[in-house]
Image (tube, rainbow, N blue to C red):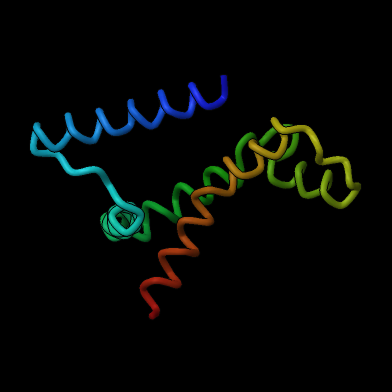
Length: 107
């Protein structure tokens, strides 16, 4: 069963690559994805990232911002639910992008 599924997936992947090449498209390699992300970061301005980071860090304002709540949960060692972990990374994502852009621009 596993062998059949593996062969089927490999065959499907090869067919997709052939179809993309016929249409003039090239599959994105690992280096291509990195270049795409760098171009994406270059298009984002610092003001947009700062505004998004501040907004995401402070929402919801009442009763307590989620990031503060999750940091308290980390301190109390109660951050273990997948939804809470996802929520923390979701609210920190603009800040993470801002840090990556600042490091990239200073190199």
